[in-house]
Image (cartoon, rainbow, N blue to C red):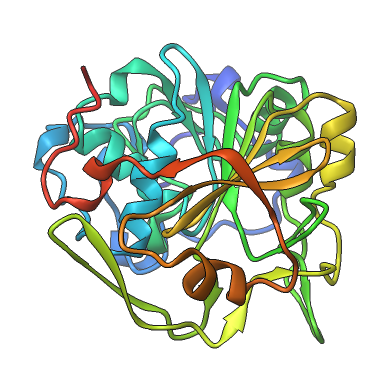
Length: 302
């Protein structure tokens, strides 16, 4: 940001010594140093200032918030949590809205510990973080089994509980930190819509309506690439859940169990017919918590 006199920096804070540097360019203004995509500089993301959490904007009640609300019900007090990119980002907003954010520690893989992880183009940053590690240090913690629960995206699921988020036809997105996180967290919850491309839903008086169905199935016979192994998780006794806007599944020894459906959903037309395999209908199948489907606080703080 600026050039200072030689010898004035605390050597413990120097990350790149001069022996690694050929040229130094002094930026003219903050706008030339984007902090995150689409945003110049926000001191609340760097920890320089604190903002009032209840001033942050709440999400509208759509499929992402429905999933985020149901997922938030899996949060346990005093747990250490990873929030993944995509739909899981909604969990952070829901936790803040419900006033339960201080009950656990939310983390994201680029380095922030605590605070309120941000979504969209700001994913990877957090408002009011307690600490900001570099990414390798964060993954040392993840790889060492530091996570109690991880919430990650759900792009493709098969009958064995395997997940693919890394390869789709000729498009190779890559696995990123997905494997590190899912292999070592004590519990994993995958979050995503039941179908993709074009899904439109509406919520009226606590009832979920499918206005327009997605064009692509996400629950398939066999995933294109295994980014997460359901069989390995069973061998290690790792609890695994799959949360969508209309149905919740759980991986058990005999396969994928359908354990909850949303109010207003036809189990055959809106769930089973949109899957390439038949899940096991759990003997204790129940409705998802009705509080999820009303545009008011759920009151899960109590």
